[in-house]
Length: 470
Image 1 (tube, rainbow, N blue to C red):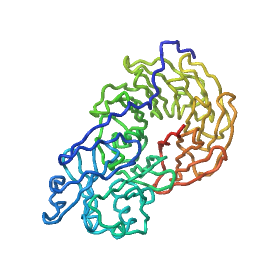
Image 2: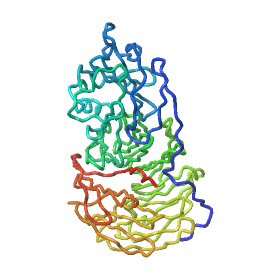
Image 3: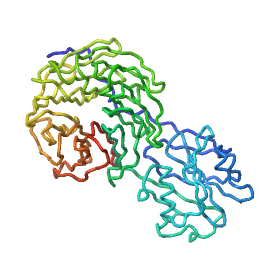
Image 4: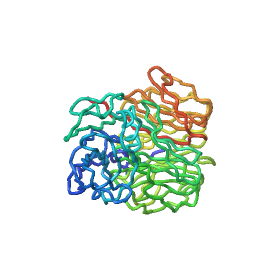
């Protein structure tokens, strides 16, 4: 169905505003805080302080005045917090590790005199930075410390220099009917953190890893904004009449879009958590997925169930439907949109995928192969590749130019619900009703790793792969 040319694709929804380097003053010592590219990376212990009480607001963290303490500030890759490590000058032992916020408040995460080995120090630091010991590298005067070494073996030092280096090259976030979200290291398979707070099942999520933020929607009719570095819930957004079944955001534009089980859409301001506008009854059924372009103030949404065998393009500024994309025999479960290149891929209960021209509304290809409902789709429109998941327990990779299936992969015990694709890395991540996530090698068509931890079905997932160096 033609939609005219009034819709002009804007920037991609996941574009990121260039980060600004902030300078934070902690006890009169200025430390330049680098913008977060990973959970914590290339953090350097610097800056000698003699007055620990000035750094720590909680009396439990105040060390005896008679102790001669050298305190080193770890530059964390976040604009909200820093890690303070207090070390006795002559003995070079860990005494206290705290998170000191910009406001001066302090939360003690480690309180132990004397780390016996480098490995035990890593274990203690892992509580602070939300990583596991194997991901932490410590350096002393340019040389990496061996896990078996003791800190005393480094020798007495009045100018202790340690470098904390944590490299997370690929991470994922999952949401489950067990009411939690889990943050995963895709390389090691480790669960880095569990997020609790929703009163009902987590149905949808959006991830902004470089900014260290995530947004989740749940059956409890709320959205929650999370700090991925600390696990803290930064805010709960209320206003939906039913469960929040879909969410997407444009971090650069500062807005998020959510859809609920009553068929309504809501536009939110991320900074304040306030609802800007509502499109009541945008669909007659539960909204299954949304794709949001904040720069153009446009969105695409699809609904599960009923007779809506289509999806819609919206002008959010005017609160008007610009186009209805019709062609599927049954309702549309999933959509993936490339706003920059003006294409959309849809997946339906009819077992088919369709590639559409966003501007004209024309169907460019129909991809057939799944034996049951298509639950999830993900695309690399530049590479003309896509991956789909289905109730038939499989995922398939596709050539969008020819419409041919490149590979069929099986391994999940139940229906495969969502998929995230990184074609450059040759990997895809899937979530399933079998309570697991699976990481796939698309070239070999095999499962690389299975992630266990959730106690109920995993409804949604998002992932971030660090771009390869050119």
